[in-house]
Amino acid sequence: MRRTMLACIQKQLTGGLLPWAVQSAAAEQFNCSLAAVEEFTLENGILPARYQRNQNMISTAEQLLLFRSRIAVIGCGGLGGYVIEELARLGVGGIVAIDPDVFEEHNLNRQLLATPRTLGQAKAKAALNRVNEINPAVTVTPIIDAFCEANGHDLLNGVTVVVDALDCISCRLELAEICTEMQIPLVHGAIGGWYGHVATQLPGDTTVQSIYRNWVQGKGIEKELGNPAFTPAVVASLQVAEACKIVLGKGELLRRRKLSIDLLDMEIHEILYGSTADVIYLPTRDIESARAAG
Amino acid sequence: MQITLKLFASFRNDRFKAAQKEIPDGTDCRTIVRELGLTEEEIGIILVNGRHVTLDYVLNDSETLSLFPLVGGG
Image 1: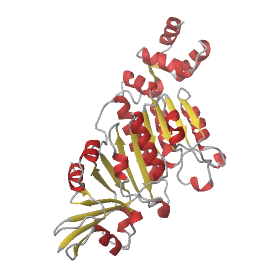
Image 2: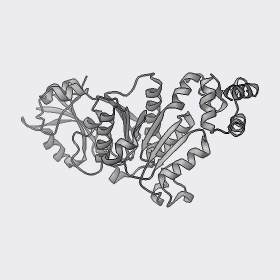
Image 3: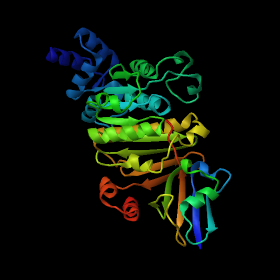
Image 4: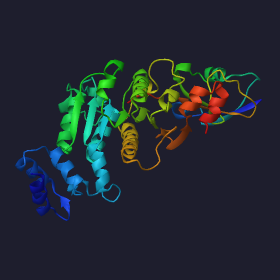
């Protein structure tokens, strides 16, 4: 059947690309999912036409890597909405969308998945609906539950990369611990008002723990400042670029460094953080800090 | 002695970006934070000459103290 499907698809390529209509028809004709057709064509070096503008920066083989990856997005609000949208358009094949909340009116100023129609709807469910609308070849697993220590290991089982789009610092620290235990790369992002930051933590690093080393309790500046429309979009896009690079194994990651972004004064600062070894093995703060500074 | 104090993000509101400050010997970062009218809960990162320190760090002459607020929203 696979040979028949390949022959059928090859006859209908346009400019060497697989048009969406042919992908949909093949799924129906051969009684398989759109995802199965997409993986099959990518395996055979054929690019679905929807990804043609990726072509000169992401090869067909890399597009297959993205399709076979499974990315967990923890939080489907300000950051998470944009992250999920971009992952789906990028062609990431599996997205686990985790959020316990429903949309409320005060989400409408910035959360991509919040519309008057989705008010009262579970955010994770809205993520599923949105992705089905923009890229039905992507499989979304919606989890309407709070990510925590008890369910974390199950939820992240088989996940390639985790994107931290949470809004609570203690939860972020728990997530970082679980990613460390499970050896999963984590892309951390946080926002508040005109400000935000992004960093990538690979297994063995303790960057997120270092970022919040002075944390005592409660929320950050977002509690006072709220969040506008543009800050989550900026930080989420940087997070997706990092997640994409982790999957493809290319480029320079924000590893052991954090970009601190100020959209009011339009400044970006890079803050360096040490490796695990610095934190664990060096007893005095000064040596640790010296290493942290690079 | 004199230090350079740099503020970032919302800490700049109604304050400054950078300033020279005369301080007595033995002043720690916590004292500076309080003098600015900030609370410990608001502090995200404390850097002295680009190195991470805690609020207990005692400043030396000519050092640069940078303060960033805590950011945790999503």
